[in-house]
Amino acid sequence: MACLLVLALLSFLEAGECGTSPYGKPAKYSLNMVISYPDFTIRFIGTRREVSKVYPRGFLYYDFEIISNKGSKTKVSWSSGTGVLGPVEFSVEGGRYYLELKANSLERDPEMSWLKENEMIIWRKEVYIEIQRELDGKRK
Image (cartoon, rainbow, N blue to C red):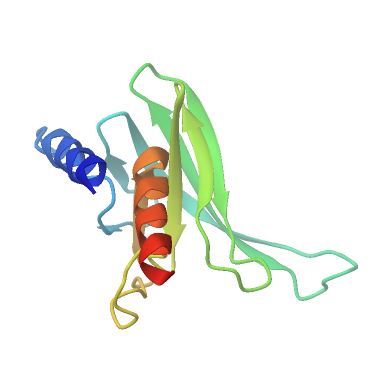
């Protein structure tokens, strides 16, 4: 529990930087809108549908461009696939993060767990895992 509080405080302090979005909180996104986080910026670049012989309906992917504070670029794609609304993991300059759309998998209140169509959450991986462990411990 103490570790969780320290990690939450660190995330809160980082969010105090001017113009940055906090990790672990919903942020609104739209096409080509740039959102700044302490370690990178992210930009929604659109959706695409991938069709296969096995699944002719195809999967809808949400594509994001990530630019580190050092200028390196990477593309991250999120999809619910066959219905699992979990986060997608990505790396930026050695840091590990999760991107969630559609649902906040760590929200304890089912009424609050659904994200709006234009909302996402970026988590630091270590914070996400710590919160998940705490929730798993409470479920046992």
